Length: 125
Image 1 (cartoon, rainbow, N blue to C red):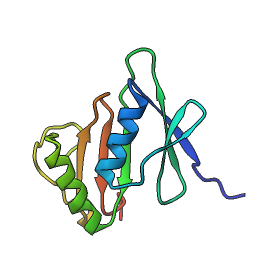
Image 2: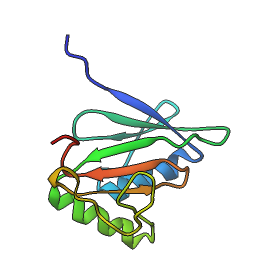
Image 3: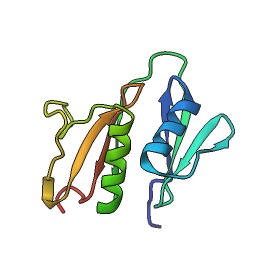
Image 4: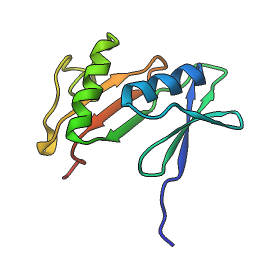
């Protein structure tokens, strides 16, 4: 049997806002609902299932592999929303796009402190 990631739960303070914001930034279809979750479907069949956390969510890292043309559109939506972005996961190089492994990448934070990333070439690629 081939093992694949099917879904992961993303703990947030407001599942509707978080799922809708990420869908808008990434240019994805609006999130659906499954039980207590807001579900954001990705192109590779993996879903992010957003759940309300009744405390302070622990920030996690989520990286999204995107096409070159998608990168520019996503970066512009980040800028249009007035969000800061960085070239590195430690947020030491503000407003810069990295060129790791011959591609492009950047990081931004959501309202719950999740460290989000878009990259056009997988690491080691």
